[in-house]
Image 1 (tube, rainbow, N blue to C red):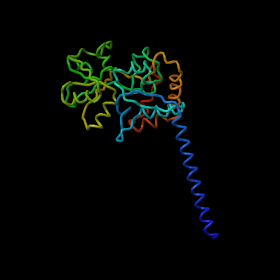
Image 2: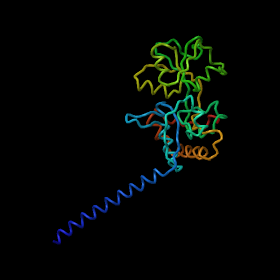
Image 3: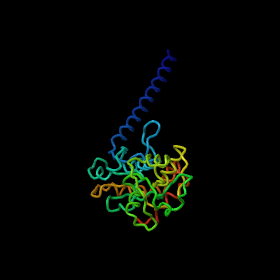
Image 4: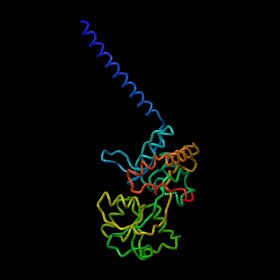
Length: 271
C-alpha cells in the first residue's frame, strides 16, 4: 500500500509539473499575441523578403523587422503588396510601413524613414555572351526594370551623365519577369539591386554577368507615411542601429549574403 502511495505521488508530481509547464507556455504565448501588431508591406524580393517552402515569409528584412519590433514591444505581420501601390497603402494606414529592399535615394521627402540599415549597389546585368561591358555600351539597347524601382528612375530621368539613351526601357510589375526577359533575349540587359541578381542566379541556375560599374550605391530603409507621428519610425531607426552595433544584423545578413560586412557600411552614404 505504501508503495502504491509513493507511485501515485510521483505520478501526481509529474502531472503537476506538466500542467504548470503548459500554463507557463500558454501564458508566454498569450503575452506574445497580446503585443500590438505592426503590418509590414513588401513584395517578393529574395533574399530580403520571400515565402519559404512552408509558405512563411522569410528573408533578411523579415528577420531584421521581427527582431527590431520585438525589442520595441510589437509583433510583425508581413503582408504581400502590389509594389506599385506601396505609397498609397502606407499613407492610407492599410499597412504601417514598407520594408522590402527599399532604396531611400531620391525618396527622402516622400516618406518618414528609419535607416539606412543596409548599403546596396544598383547594377546592370547582361547575359554572359553579351558585348555590353560598361554603362556606355547600353546606348540604343533594350533594358528591363521592375516598375517604380530606383533603376527605372535612373534610366527615365538620366540625370547621371554616365547613363546613355536606350532604345527601349521596359518596366515590369514583378521582379522575376525582368530576368525571364533577359534569359529569353527579349532585352539586352536588366537593372536591379545586386543582391537580387545574385539570388536569382542561385535560385534558377542562371548565368548572368554583372557590370563592374554600378549605377549607384544606395541606402536601404524602412518607410513610414510622411505624417506618421506615432514615434515608431524614430524608435525603429534607433533599434536598427543598436542591432547593427551589437552584431545582430551581421548574424542575420550572413545567413543570406556573402561578405556581409560590406552591406553594413552605411555611415558614409550621406543620409
